[in-house]
Length: 178
Image (cartoon, rainbow, N blue to C red):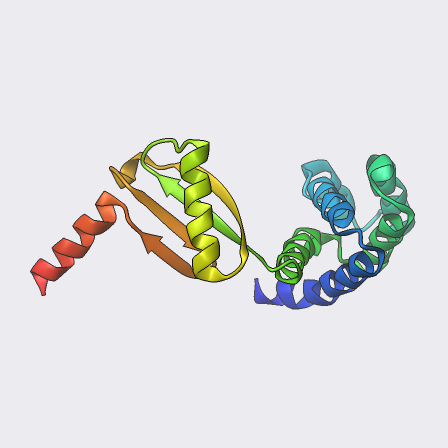
C-alpha cells in the first residue's frame, strides 16, 4: 500500500498544481473520480493487464469511455498515466488529490455516526462546533450505526470523539477492570 501511495503522490501533486493554476479544483475532482471508476472496472482492468494489448490500444479504449468527461488536460494526464503504466494507481491519485485540495481550501472531512438519523439542524450544530474546535471548514458525512445505542461518534482525520452510549459503556467496563 505504501508503495502505491509513493508512486501516486507525484502525479497527485502535478494535478493539484494544474488545478490550482487553472482554478479548476472541482473539474479535476470530477475527472479523477470518473477516470478512477473506469480504471477499476473489471473489463478495463483485464484490458490494462493484458500484455498483448499495447498502450495505444489501451489509450484509445480508455479515452473512448471517458471522452465526454475529460478536458484536453485530463486526456493528456490519462495518456501520461497509460504511457508510464500507472493507471492502476489512479484511485490513489484521486484520493491524494482530494486531500491536497481539502488542505488548500482549509477543509477537513468529518464522519458523524449516530444511533439514529440526524436532522439538518443537528448536523449543522455539530458541524459548527467542529469548525470552532478544529479551526477549519468541516465537510461532514453522516451515517446511522445502531450499535452505538445512543449518542454519536465523530471521526475527523485521526481524531475520534466518542459520545456514544456504547463508547461510554466500554470506558466504564475498562475502568472497572483496572
